[in-house]
Image (tube, rainbow over all chains, first blue to last red; front, side):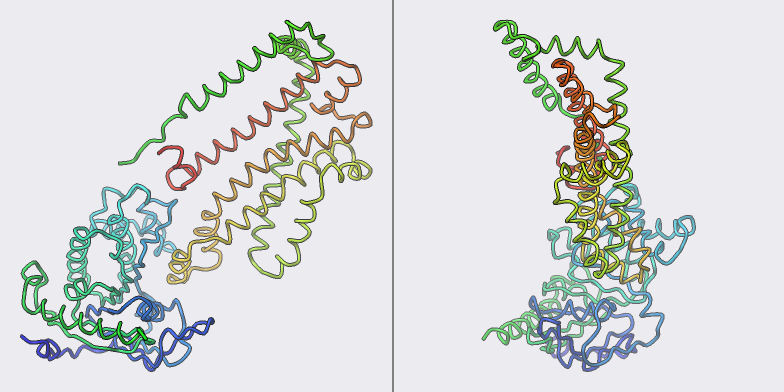
Length: 264
Length: 265
């Protein structure tokens, strides 16, 4: 299968959220995004790949509603999608004084769900990420990978339609990252949420995604878009397959273009 | 997995205690060897004897001073935290109020005390003095704490559309706790200083019965051992207040805040 074939996979799922001609200029005058278009399609794992400072985190923050665009529009297929987004940040961003249980409880607590009513859902979310035995531990007592699992459980506990993940595994060692990548795919199969994933790792993007969008450092211009058949099982065989190698090669080339574009 | 905080290592208590006993022994030896009269420099044994002899008088004065210090600290904590919360709500309130709090802080309390004694009953003047000096560190530290919330956590609360009240209860107050406790530790020590300073300023005119008044009174009578005895009690009170607040802070922050963890690891 050549790189061209990868792109030929037809995906016709409807868009969950669409960014149309979106621009973001920070008060400092920095142009983070200009005239940016993106559809997030239902059920996909979309990876935004690009060098640091290309605006991929900005895209994520705009979709999550943590920042507003200075130009263009963000259209939602349904308002309830917008109101129930799970976000996993670069750091686990856990409340350091609260137990694992209370950290996962937080989104429900903020929505006014009483502790007793929330408890089964919290335990379910903790069980999914393998932290049920650590529900009373404080974040300080967890390893980096476990803290990230806790953050994932917290994002899952509201059963979001859309999950946004901003380089969540960047700080972890490779073995832990591989494990968490597999766990994430398993969770995705179980919950079926749409995932927007930001990374600067070509291999991680190629392994997880059903679609990769490579962004340029020049205000988020799109350099390349790579579709990967969602039917392909993601396992060790996939990691050593020709398709995986092709995706990596094409994504690397696009990434190189995007970096060269930005270097004067 | 979960580490229990270890007890305070013996060397943290043993070493300073050993130094203290050594210094006291040298002092005792010097006084005996040089035959220094007690009205110039009393030996530690004489001071100790005086402490025992005047225990009822000194103990009631100690309770008086500690009571005022404690009351002042409680009021300063309530007012300091309340004002910090108010200031955190708006930049305008901060602009309007903070300069006055700072002015109060930078004016030496010993210069304010005589004025307070003109307008207030001596007992109340002492309380107000102690309050004034304890108030500012609690206010400024709590303000700092409320303002320095982790950006990621702020985003998280915005994401889940937390109300300002929820942000305060679940995020800003716990975030501010370490700084607040640091302010409380400073405020506790300063409240004692404020109380002592006001009593000293009241001097013979006051009807105060606190430890500082005992020092002034003993000074008039040239009862130097009693001056030392009262001084020792003041020092011990300061240490006790600091120790109690440090322990309080350790219990609250243990497990999650770096300042408390550093002692364990």
